Amino acid sequence: MFLASDPGPQLLLLFSFGMGMAAGSKCPQSCLCQDQEVACTDLELTEYPNDIPLNTRRLFLNNNKITSLPALQLGFLSDLVYLDCQKNRIREVMDYTFIGVFKLIYLDLSSNNLTFISPNSFSVLGNLVRLNISNNPYLLYLDKYTFANTSSLRYLDLRNTGLQTIDEDAFQHLVVLNTMYLSGNPWNCNCSFLDFAIHLLVSQMETPDGQIAMCTEPTELRGWPITRVGNPLQYMCITHLDSHDYIFLLLIGFCIFAAGTVAAWLTGVCAVLYQNAHRKSSGDEESPLSEEENRFANQIFRSHTNFRQGRFPQLI
Image 1 (cartoon, one colour):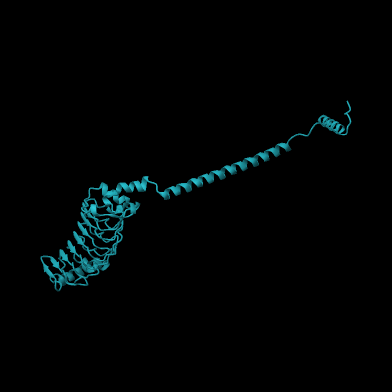
Image 2 (cartoon, one colour):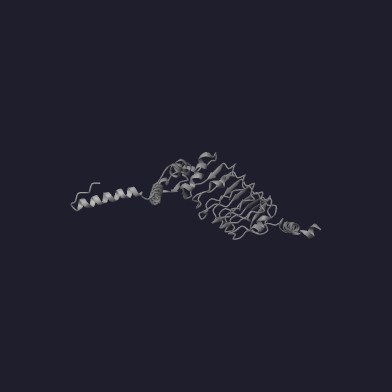
């Protein structure tokens, strides 16, 4: 009844068993097979070889022309602990490439044509101890999740790639990593490199080639070892102000000054308008002159008129 409801895992198991029966005792043509070790070195292979015994623990595919690693065939090697693929023409490593080889301890992908490593490529390799992806000059970028699940990794070789920077978060799960090679890369030691540079300073990790792993950018740090640029980068990126920062501060100051001037002008206009309105309302509310005050004002007016006409004012 279980088989009828969910036959997928059972079919896969039967298929794997059939493959094991068919290929368990075979050896790829021209390869050497002995004691769970298969060596297919220097055979000019352009594809992953067929008929590799499923109990293989060490597989050597180095010095060939293989362009890709097929996940299906590789996944049947569930006991594989050692895989050497150096000096081939592998271009990409996808999410599912190593899905079945979760016991893998040693992986060498050096001297290939790698341009892309998917963020989840090594996600199942929790037992991986040594990883070599050096001499891949077209590998320009590593995602910060590339090593997220490789918590057992102790040795990492990144020499002679096209990497210019690395996100420091890529190493937060590598708590036992103790050796890393970094030379031969065009490191761009700008402010985005600061976190990684500080990580190199404060971590206990060994970088045997740290003194020859040089910055190529920016100009003021060209030729500096990347293991020593942490402090200069802190000064340049945190405490130091360059010309762009001064221009920005000048613009901010001008904006604040302009905003203050406009606010003061508007306040003055409002004050004047309020004062005029108050004055007009006060004038309208004043009471008219009394009769006696009007008569006295008329007398003063007539006296002033007589004086202008050459007559003396009449005495009352």
